[in-house]
Image (cartoon, rainbow, N blue to C red; front, side, top):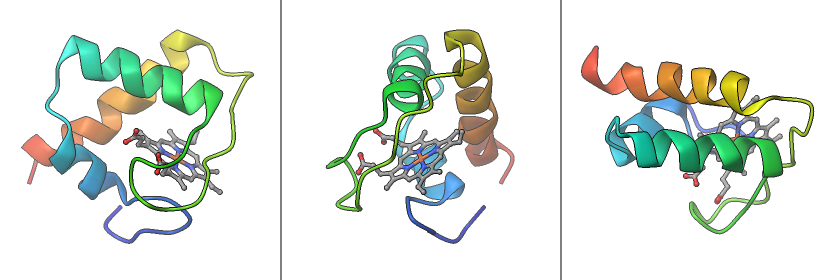
Length: 69
Ligand code: HEM
């Protein structure tokens, strides 16, 4: 939740991105295809078995952590 592991913590991600359609879609695609460089951490591998709907549901959850603080 608050501790970065291999990647950024959920709360850091929630602070960075407002809950807006464009970010939900962007981050959902990023979870599926993987990526690097945005946080200065190593690479997040791809999760190609996730559907966009599943990935976006995860993004909704992560970004919702900011407003519940
Ligand atoms: C389904 C599980 C996962 C979800 C929902 C998830 C979610 C996310 C999100 C939303 C970001 C932010 C991307 C951005 O700001 O552009 C991110 C970044 C990152 N994640 Fe994950 N992640 C998952 C699994 C993993 C795993 C298994 C690893 C590594 C073992 C990992 C490593 C990273 C790293 C290194 C970054 C930073 C990439 C960058 O600098 O652009 N993630 N993750």
